[in-house]
Image (cartoon, rainbow, N blue to C red):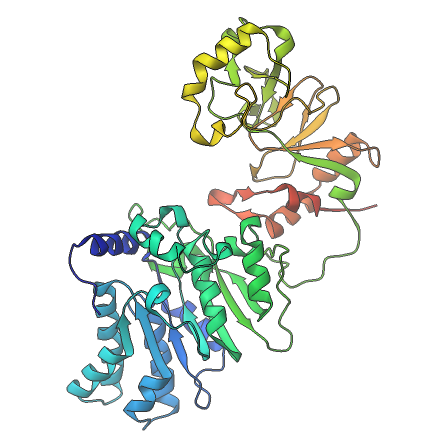
Amino acid sequence: MDLFGQTERGAAIDALHAATAIYTCEPIIEQLLDHIRWPVGARTLVDTSCGDGAFLGRALDRLLVQQAGISDAELLARVSGWEIHFFAAGQARARLRQVLRDHGYAVDRAEAISTSMIRCADFLTEGPTSGAYHAIVGNPPYLRFSHVPELLRGEYSGILPDYARADLLHSFLDRCATLLHPDGELAMVTADRWLFNDGAARLREVVGQRFGLAHVSRLDAETAFYRPKQRRANTPPRVHPVAVVLSRADGASPIGREPIYPGENAGKQAPASLTLGQVAGIQLAPWLGTPGVFLVDASTAAQLPVAHMVPAVDSADIRAGMLMQPTRFAIVTRPGVEPHPKVVAHLAREMPNMCARGQRRATQWLPPENVHDIDVSRPSLLVPRITRTLRPILVPPGLLPINHNLRIVCTGAMSLTDIEAHLSKPEADTWLRENAAPLESGFRALTAKCLRALPISA
């Protein structure tokens, strides 16, 4: 059915389309189709979120070039597409109709085939749950599940497994993997985050039980898409795209829970060596929630007992590679020990300002994440979690790194000075570019797990 009109469902579909309609340029489509065996023999192909039909148009053209004279019934059995938004579905039908006309099909015949080839419906709720397509292609939607319109999110929650509900991309990848023929190939443009985010580990494991990674390469968001989602004119979308091919072909790399970093070293065997995680402790600095509650300025700290205060620093305190004088202080409290009355009064007054995420502790005087068990009596190294370089910042004793930056401490296997020297080498920055997730303007998103894997030469 065509989902038309501004009913509640129609409005939800419009909102979803506005957030996810990001279409792939033809050169990228051609490159992906070159990676799969389409249209060999009687292989079948589907695009589960076909948008304006860009993938299907190129796939249909290849089929008609290589198998001229194919019957209408076989065409419809071999090529199909799903699209939830009525306007995009109309665009897809128009594109396929033109491809058919270019190959000599009469107007009425091309109209009938293109109309039947595209189904305007929600693939996740109305699409097949069993079957075996030989090729699944496209550019599925990328949208965090919490941002999916509420009506649709409720429908999806009842049918999708837990591990496939963090992002719509996860939902489509999981469903597509179940519908792929054992001899099939999935060729898609996706956001890169499912390859390495911890929250997608179970998804990778499930997909990897069926297929391996036959190809992955980074794409340039500025040239990969011709209809960026709602952004300022002429700016690329905030997504880091990759071209991905899954199959059981010889040479396909296994996929498991471990992260896959699709950088320059994708598919290469890492050299055998020590890693940073083997010679140092790497910790995620605590997040203290809304400023003003457990993280206070100097004037507030001066009114509270010194025994409860520790100077706090994060990447905002770094200037030109140097750590500035701390201007904020963390309130340190302990489980089972009621704080000083002044601290209790401060927290009672300020806690209503704490964001919901920071109010999960059963004991009201404890911060969102533990501070009391962090040893600040020794120096440490701070590496910003969002960074262009691995060059660390020395944090003197008595200062507490905060806000989920990475804190490196000496465990005795290597001195902090030597660790700092290793992280300051050009090779470390090269490794960062190849392994950490890219962000805007040359920045990388670094995780503790990723940093622990940094090779350390003897």
